[in-house]
Length: 233
Image (cartoon, rainbow, N blue to C red; front, top):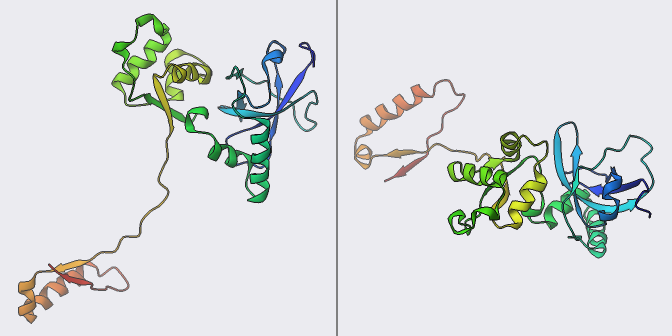
């Protein structure tokens, strides 16, 4: 394809959605786009994600106007064509979405999204690096991370007045200064059971034990049933 052709790419986004999505490539990026590279794409009105290029072609989508990609993250592909074929097989065999396979296959440091967070790399020391190794904006973020344990991509975006920060974050990761992680909210809520510990001295007095149990039952009078489970300590 010529560098002045209008190119489109099908990408896999790191979301549990059934389809691959088509985006348009700015002509100045034509010579740099390739299958297996990561690109930053806008998905929805405000979210930006790291997507993997699945296919490069010249066919615009029929059902919607393709958005332009924001940027290309990689100089060389990070996923091979053979690996993408394996992802397809996994998706079909296990009846799961392409984005689910991508999430399982790629380490978190390669999945830069607007919902991600960054923190200082434990093996990194800013004091040991020459000052000019980092840009002024990079110093701003690193110094903020010295005060705050972590920053969201939105925090960095506001701090630097940038619309998208994935490319900026990627450079800091490559320099070994930060690591990325996903904020995981625990959806599991354990079932709790109340137990009553009985003082052994009460076992010798039936009247005192009955008094204690009557008091407990009154406290739980709003419940349909009240069960006693005892253990002796």
